[in-house]
Amino acid sequence: MTISLRPFLPSDAPALARLFRDSIETLAEDDYTDDQRAAWASSADDLAEFAQKLSESLTLVALRDGALAGFASLADGKIDMLYVEPGHAGHGVATALVDALEKLGRARGAKEIETDASDVARDFFAKRGYAPMQRNTVMRAGEWLANTTMKKPLGTPEKPGATH
Figure 1 (cartoon, rainbow, N blue to C red):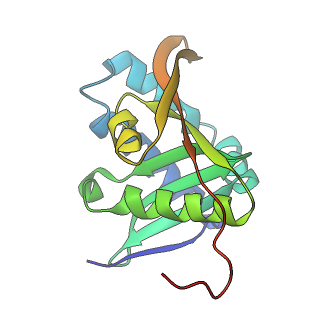
Figure 2 (tube, rainbow, N blue to C red; figure 1 turned 45 degrees about the vertical axis):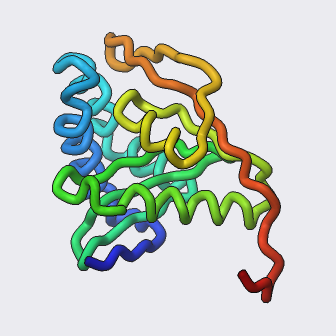
């Protein structure tokens, strides 16, 4: 199984909106109520707005053996979105996406990276060295959703030609 990454293209927006909804509906089932998941997923109802948000960020699309498997975005030093198609969950897609965003952040001089991790993603980020900073509640379509702000130091960028 090969995972490849590429930049977001505007034509990806409809497929990524579907993936976003499917990911929330399926993968967040144990952590959020039906109403909370529906409210969260409604963020993709306005396709033009959803596409605009993705295009204003550094958004990467993951393909696993050529099939759309996930996406992630980085905006202002923060991983803003990380979603994996449920059938590809647990196969390294999220890891590949976050590895790439961390590397890009480090290359751009960021000293740390942050995310507001959903309850679904909190353990994933903790295993990657992200430390919880605070609990948050956010309102989405009339429903309160909880998440955790987490941060990770990135260290210094590698010098070109450095060997390990």
